Amino acid sequence: MAQTQLTSDCHKDFDCLVFIGRFQPPHLGHRAIIHEALKRAHQVIVLVGSAWQARSLRNPWRFEERSEMLRSCFDENDNARLEIEPLLDALYNDDVWVRDVQRKVRDIASPSQGRLPRIGLIGASRGQSSYYLTLFPQWESVSVPIVEGISASGIRERLFRSPAAASDYTSTGAAHDLPPGVLDTLEAFTRSQHYQHLLEEQQLLQQYRQAWADAPYPPIFVTVNAVVVQSGHVLMVKRSAAPGKGLLALPGGFINPHERLLDACLRELRERVRLKVPAPVLRGSLRGQRLFDEPHRSWRGRTLAEAFYFALRPEQQLPQLKPAKGGDRARWVALADLEPEALFEDHFFIIQTFLGLPASLGSP
Image (cartoon, rainbow, N blue to C red):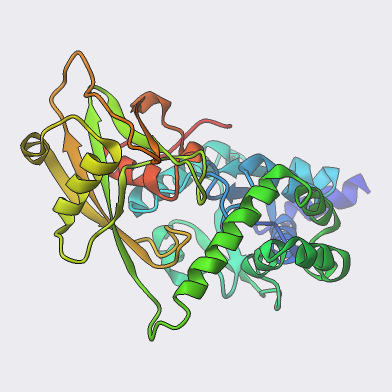
């Protein structure tokens, strides 16, 4: 047996194959790709995207949970050749994201007999888009047939439609989509407080969609956000209601029909945050603005955010904030204390874009 294993290992096509995904959740299609990678490479690196993000209907499970689910799909020998690493998104800077992927693979991939390792990027033939291939021209591309009829988004839709629908799915149809260990984990998850919280957001989302159901075209919303920085702190609000209840967010909101974008941003700072900085000072502190338009950035649907970066002059005291009645509570947060998983939607990445915060974090 040992001799057979040694002979098989000697005929691997690659030293290392890399598989990148979000795995929300891991399903039989993902397992098939990793199985193929293990057949063709001595070492397989699975990079789990959206690793440090707050739970949401699109990203319900943390990195640790997804890592455990992935490992439950394989035996001890396979797991010994499997490296599962978290990957932080960089939604508005492909170069930062590519550098992070390159560094992780470089640090993990083992040299082979004194030469550079042969590395490939593996994925399903439909999911492995040519766009991503162009980002890693130094690696060979390996496409495997897609497992038809399985999608992570479809699984999430069944789980979060309602508790009854989730129970029906896990007890009847889920075995066609999910490995046994993953199914056990998801069944336990549906009995957790995290699941109840996400169900509340799902109900709000359904109400939101129903309100726009008769619109002649899918609605596109426009919002503004303020990135106000002073003395190593950024102005944030703690959301008091779903969606994102308890998460930190940038001040902002929807624009009124007859106002310009900057005026809407200043109004939000004045009315909702009650920031004690005169409007002329804020206007004079404006250092940049940008449109943030990642298609999945908001739970509401297609929502564009114009963000404005204000760099206030350093002072011994941070400007006072007066709580608005019935609104979210504003606070100054030290930049060193910003954690992506504690921020709403893509607000960490908006701050990251203006301030150049690092894209790579340590292991959770």
